[in-house]
Length: 309
Image (cartoon, one colour):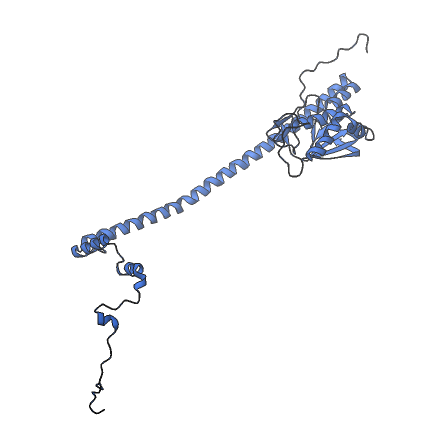
């Protein structure tokens, strides 16, 4: 056993396998090659060359010469002056605009006040003319003149009658022009139209009404019910729903006769098919104003009969 060789006690550690083979050791981030490339080369080669060229020529960053610095300072000062002048001009013109606006408001208010004054003058002159007409009719026509004034709507009337309130449907829907509205021009079947109101008024006249008003507008034999867009016009005055129709007549008979008439049935169909709402009630006292659009076109005095004192 003494003749056997023993291994040396000082053995150097074995080199790593890669160093034994002579190849470099792999990087820990070798699996992220794309990200590593982006981090190592943040600029494209063309941009990097341009940046290096500017640095070599001394043109990168802020201007370094005194002339360039003065030019930059002058530009900044000019921009600040433009902004300051703009703000000062806006502040200076603000009171002028406010003053002009107030002047326009004052003009509108003065015009409204002048128009109100003219309307008061018109009403006063109208009352004066109506009084003179009544006096003239009393002298030449007697009771017949009062009856003509009453039937023509020239005077205010009151007495028993009915109140018919008509309103559009809730959540009006688009219609297809089916019956009873045969015209396809009605785009909204849930809204009361001018021809609907015409039928209602004509039905009340035929049922025995002596005087009728719609939302305070007295109707006469010359009254016109028309439409302008979605609004109903009575003698060129627009009305808004709900429409309150007052009629003087026999309160016990007028409402029943109207509901049984063809026009009353038409209103009932509008309620059933299109949701138009209406209520009818008898009133012990109904007051109607005089017609505002009444115009006397011709007037002649009745000749006295021969032999009359």
